[in-house]
Amino acid sequence: MGIDLGQPQAQSVRSDEDVVRVRQLVRAVAVASKLSLVDQTKLVTAASELARNTLVYGGGGSVEVTVVDNGRRKGVQIVFADSGPGIADLDLAMTDGYTSGGGLGLGLSGSRRLVDEFQIETSPETGTRITVTKWSR
View 1 (cartoon, rainbow, N blue to C red):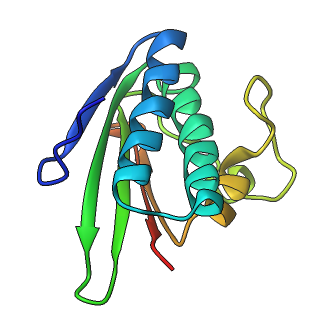
View 2: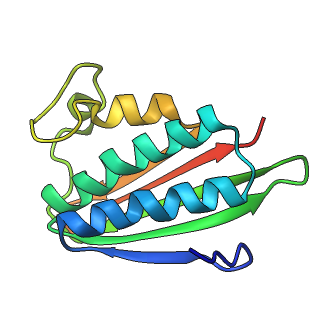
């Protein structure tokens, strides 16, 4: 998979096959960005859970993977966006051990622990947008 690290890489999420494609895309960008194997695995695991949530709970959506640079180090940023109903109880959804079933069992809190930065915006009007970043060590 040829990756242009200078451009964001987009992937729609409409099926289980798209979730697999998100995993492959994130792994390719993480490898090309020279993240360690451990950090690659953490990022791909979080991306898999969040892409599945985008499909199952958001009714599908999009993922955008971008290489970022803060002047000290490079990283990979991923934005998951859907137009679904939003997350009714965000505090509950972010609680360790909470699952509504069907995913890897990590939930949002597990995904948050696997990345360095985690931001979530959700509402019934706009759906859910989750941005995660994993920085090189």
